[in-house]
Length: 288
Image (cartoon, rainbow, N blue to C red; front, side):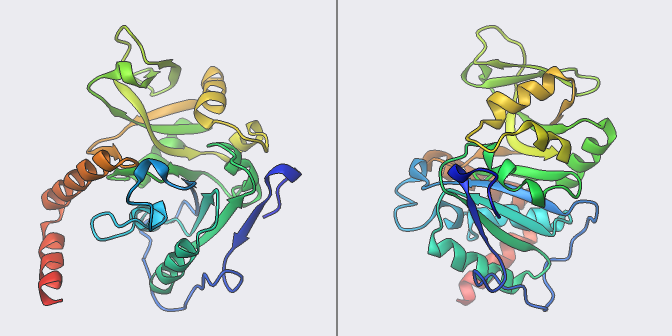
């Protein structure tokens, strides 16, 4: 995928060029059908998650017996996404090999890598992938997030309000440590962002999961850009940014203490919603 400027070219691999094959065997069977693309902001070397990333790239660090990244791709595929773009700052062979293996088992979703020549922030990767994100609304998410991933609900809400951006938000106990999303309770239209408020303005923070319309890409220059600090405030000023509150657990597992907390939260969620999965995993482990 060619970059519009020389300082941040990207290279994509899919099919034979990267060994990311798409077998004809049956794979994940999408439950949706209205959404086709997603971009995951994978990032760089995973220094925050050390020592777990000293011997393994962050996206394929096991999280409850499944690579972190593939939890997200599984949820996207189940929502009807057929192509996932991984925005990465470098090209670890272990990641390519893991995606190759994943594709051999899940042919319904195509995964491609978009590698930056320089760090492009959280919005720049969207500009680089602009030509591949024109078909309709698409999902964007941070790779460190673990939650229930209600993509179908997110897409439906995004289509109802007709704006350019929908962000998922989640409540926190101490909003003074975060950037708070202030929105109209009736419509979800975001009014402003307040960074580390010292007086209470709300408890909802950005959950790192978005649904975007292609028109928002016209706002993003092909340079290092922050989607949270530069793009979203501009969209909110035009009253075209909405928020949807996330039900259920949510956690950023990008640091070891939170990774451990996230494991407990994820397993508690599975136990409450699909206990047979835990029993099957225990039986498989015992048989091995």
